[in-house]
Image 1: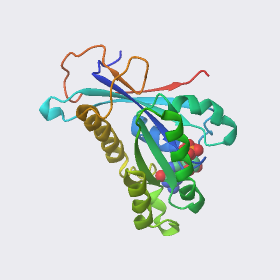
Image 2: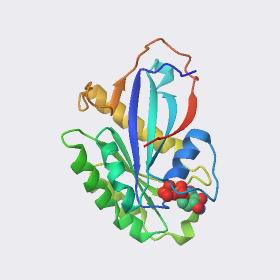
Image 3: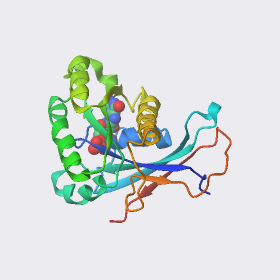
Image 4: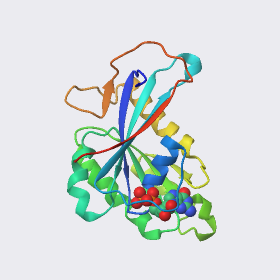
Length: 215
Ligand code: GDP
């Protein structure tokens, strides 16, 4: 049974193929990691429900996490998902210089498609368990994040490093923007939905599920 939520945020994971997008989402929603994974074909989505500031009775937020295929041939499918997203995870592989250099391209492509909507990004340097093979310094990644107006975190799905913190940071940024009025709820936009049920919940109540898109 679905846990009642007050808000739903739709977030899209972006970045080159094999940077670890699916693994990151799977670690966050299912707490699992496998070294072999099928490439994402088109779009998959995962969900997890979180309570913001439970000690202060904060809202229950359902995160709908969309996983896009990095391959060029699927871009036509994924573009239509950009428009209905409020958050974006810009993921690169810390051991791949090329994946870092492509981040600006991902950013620009998404921003062009969401205008006039606002999208809140988080830049992620992934696979930080392979730090000895690092090809991108923290300093230059932080500079890029600054130039894109977002925060930066280094994660590993393999060792479960900073995964919870990264999603918490992005969810909080979106929630704060909503409270400040920087993001406006609209009936013709699926980026943020107000919940169908505002019943108070136990703070520790959470739920995970994975769904496969039929498109
Ligand atoms: P996607 O194409 O961006 O969705 O990438 P995947 O999630 O399919 O991962 C591509 C490869 O990187 C797979 O072999 C994963 O096991 C591996 N991988 C993903 N995350 C990590 C990580 O945090 N550390 C390491 N060492 N490998 C990872």
